[in-house]
Length: 314
Image (tube, rainbow, N blue to C red; front, side, top):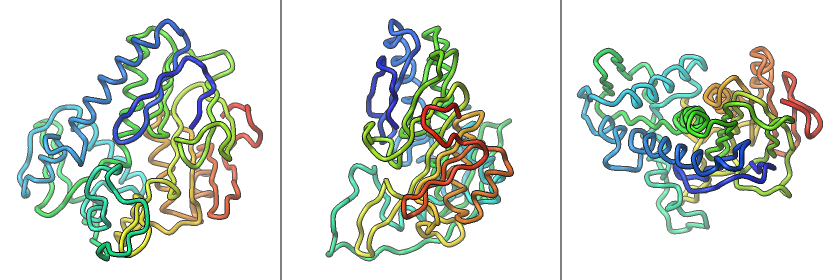
């Protein structure tokens, strides 16, 4: 997602690109330092690709309870809340399914070109979020032997919310934080709101097909099957798994963008909408979440008050 404000900074974060924008140009350094600190804490807790992360310790625990940090308790709690709110359409126990599909290392290391000699992928069942035992009072998490958590559907959005709030406190001005298309704002932003361009791919520039909107508060998240794809001997795969069958979801929508009171809630809704397919538009409308759903042919549908023209407020 391109951001029109000139005072921005970009850097690599959580296997994606972070963008930080401020309403006071003199505070960009303080905001970036704060965001980088928050991102580093989430990476240490929630990364599936770091051997020293808390998530890796939980996944390797062979069914034993693992004592973790309050941040990890919050992140797993958010993932379980997402599962409960979506009837399991957003499920953190998809880790083994993603590994079986070939997503077993950092995304930048996955093959994106044709792989005619690559092994055919397998499919793994999703155990279900109710198998996760979180004891907030004891500060422990336990998953059964053979179950692997993946927090990619929620941790990045939670990090964006936390990073924006922390950077606002550190910089003393309005802050926007985007982590791979998961966007949160805190404090008083520009008078006309933060202008952002909503596209299929958050790495796109202002010339990519999409729509300019302005946001003033809360969060914006985009989920898409058009990005984070890799090639295997079984063909092209993507990272959005249908918990019902452990396979990359086949959806009526290639991209769904949602605004909500927080980036986390927006992300929960946008991810579930991809999984729900045709049922998603009515569901988002019933929740009153302004959303932009782009079909596989590129036709956009707006629901629940999402602006029909660029530069309107969402």
